[in-house]
Each structure stands twice: as structure tokens, then as C-alpha cells.
Length: 84
Length: 278
Image (cartoon, chains in turn red, brown):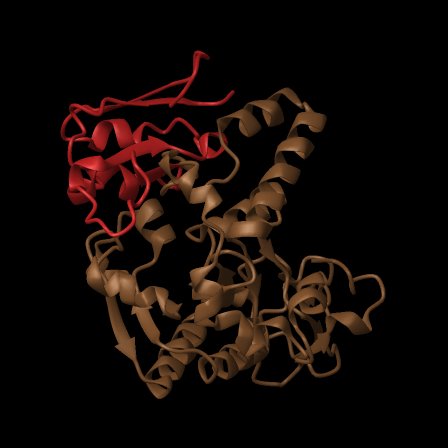
């Protein structure tokens, strides 16, 4: 069963400086990326950084990421449905 | 001699020893299409470090082999044209450092995406070529910018990384333009992960395969932790280390660890069954 991992971007507004869930996940399921690709010849705005589930098949459902998040921004479920 | 050596090697024994593949000329004309099309606007690609996304995982779960193979082939073809890697040995890396300019230390994209490492702790990759001036100018876009290195400094860094247990590999940015000399490990290297977890050839095997001389191996098992490719294990009944030749990427990390000199690298091309296995 593939995990469905949802991140509320409004609560998780500065993942670059937090990264708590990234560091706590034993299977390295989550990834820090950008919602726009690196724009050539421009500085990247830190507000464009996002946290997403990536390697869903490795998620065991331990929920460490859910518990460690100081903003309650991440949800993990195994009831089917599209993940982000 | 791999496909790339045939296409881009000219008279050099390996394509990555051909200085033409590090040339500014290539950097300037490298393929713009993927970026222009917004391939990097995809959050999974732009930092997710997974060329195969959720569709692939859902197909895998359903056991839809046809869909899986199709998606893999697309990902591999795309990677081969724009951005993919090949494992090299430390000696290869030291030779390459003498060819290219400028040489920089840069932050690792994969480790930032997977571990959220702050830039200061994350300068583990070697960036090569004129693209590095772009990184110098816009450090925030390019993850903290660059530290320019002399060839001797670069060799020292790479040797240290190898000693630490990181695999050296080279990456193209618009094949065959080589822009990165990475120090990879599993699971934080995106390409290593894609290759080992799903068999996606985003990272190619190197030109060597490691072999153990069982008469020299004394069963000390100091090499076992060195393999990032799951090709090396310890066999208690024989009291020997074992290398699965079909899984070996020829990085040489086990070779340098062995006190007994029991492990050697042989040319992949000398083993008929493995000569074309990349």
C-alpha cells in the first residue's frame, strides 16, 4: 500500500530552514525541492522551496515526520487516494 | 569501452578523458529544451531527485510491468540526453581533475533535497567548467555558490571523500558535456537510489569490475562496509568476502580498503558477459 503524503504549504512555509521531517525520516522518503525550477540568472526566492513525499514506496508509516513537525503541516495516510 | 566512449571518446581510452567533453563550446550549446519546457518546474524533478514519480510507484504496486518498463525507458532516454552519471575510480577522478577548469567545490543537490543539509555542511561535490561562474554570481540560486579549488586541492578533497567511503562519479549537463564530479552514497545520491531501487539507468556502471582473490582474502571483513552498490557481502561458511560481479559498479572502494591486496579491478570489457552491461 503506497503512503499518501500531504503537505500543507501554508503551514510549511519555510521548509528550507526547518527540515525536521527530512532529518527524522528513517527511509528518506521526503524531499526538499522548489515549486519553480532554478530560474537562470536569478536568485531563487526561499519562499519557493517546498517539502514533498517522493519515495512513497519506502514509507513504512512510522509517522515520525507527522509527530516532529512543529506546524502540523504534514499528514500521512494509507487509505488510498492521490499523494502529492 | 561503453557506448559513450564510442560516441564521444575520440582517440581517448575513455570518453571522460577527452578534454573536448569539458569544453566551454559544449557548455554554451548544451541542450536548452528540457529546461525551457519547464522540466525543472516539476517539484519532483526540481529537487525531488526522482526521475520516476508516483505514477511509476503505483504501476509497480499494481504489478504493471509494461507501464513500469515504458516509464523507465523514457526516464533513461531523457537522462542520457540531458543529465546522467557514470561511476569512475579514484584514479580516473584524479586524472580528470588535471583536464578541466575551473574546478570548484559546490553544495550537493541530492543531499540538500534528501537531508535538508544546510549549505555550509554540504559542500561535497566537485563542479567543473565555465558553468561555475554562473554559480559564483548567483549563490542563492545555486545553493551557496562555489569555492574555487586548485587541482591539488581538488585531488585532496576527492581522495578524502574516497577514503571516507564515497563513490566518485561523473555527471553530464547536456550530454556529453561533463559538469559534475560527485561523491555519492546510498541512499542520499538521487541517481544511485534510482538505479539500485528501480534499476533505472540514470547512473551507469564504471569500466571496471572488482574481483577477490580467495587465496589472499583472510576473512577480516574490513571491505564489507565500503560497497554502496550491495555487491559485496561476507560469507561466514567460507570466511571470505564475496563480490557479485553482475552487481559490481567498479568504483574501487573495496579495493583500496583491503590490507591483503586481495581485491583487484579488471576491465569490464575483458569479461564477455559483463562487457556491455552498463
